Amino acid sequence: MVTREIRRAAPLDRGTSVLGQLSSHRVFAALPESVLAEFASEALERTFRRGHQLFYERDPVVYVYLLLSGVVAMTHLGYQGNAHSLLTFTAGDLLGIAALMFERRWTVNGVAVSNTAAILLSVDRFEDAYRRHREFAHQVTAELACMFLRSQEVTFNITQTSVTARVAKFLIDAADERSDQSTGAPILELKLSYHELALMLGTTRETITRAVARLSRSGLVDLRGRHVRILKPDALRRLTEI
Image (cartoon, rainbow, N blue to C red; front, side):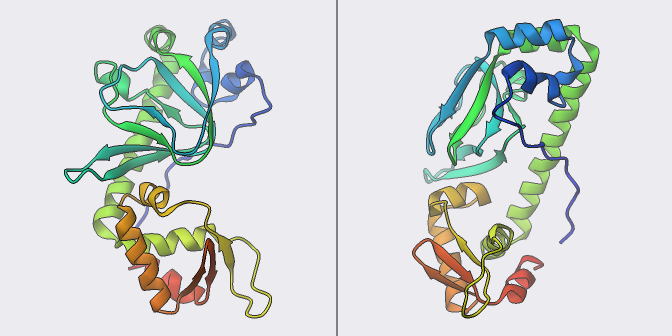
C-alpha cells in the first residue's frame, strides 16, 4: 500500500500559557504579537471528557478549537444511524477552519474519543485575522490543504484496506515495549472501547468486534479483557500490507 507523507501537528505543552501556545503554533506564529495578545485575552480553556459531543452538524461555528491533548473525531451518521468517522484530530490540530467556508456552520459532528483539552478562540477574531494578515491566511490555507490530504488518505484506507487490516495496523502501532515474560510477545492495554476504536478506524463497533475475533481465531493475537498479546507480530504486519 502506498502512503503519503502528511505533516502532523507537533505535541503542545499544556503547561504553557495561551499566548505561549499561540505564538509557538505553526499557524498563529505568523501573526503580530499584538494580535496574538488579543486572541489570548478572549480565549477559553476547556476540557472535554471522553465521549463528550463538542458540536453537532449544522450548529453555528462560534469557536475555532486548538487541541492541546486528546483525540476528536469528526463523524457523520450513516443511513442506518451508525456514526462513521471522517477524520480525527490530535494535539496541535485546529478544528473549525474548514467550517468557516460553509456559512459558519459545522458540516459534521465532533466527539471526544479520549479526554481532551482545547483552547477555544473567537471565530470572529480568527476570520478578521485571516482577512487582514496575508501570511496568516497563507498558513491557514496550508493547514486546510494538509487536512484535505489527510482526508484523502482516510478515504483510501477505508476503500482499499479491510477493517481487519486496519485493526492489525492499530495494534502494531499501539503495542508498547512491554513483553509477556514467558513468550516475549508484545502486549498492550486496549484503552479504547470498540465504539471508540470504530470511530478512529472509520467503521462500526460490530465490524470491529468481528475483525478482532477473526484475528484471535487465526492465532495472531490473544485477547483477555482489555489486554492484547500479539502472538505473531510478523504475520500481523503482513496483514497491514494487503
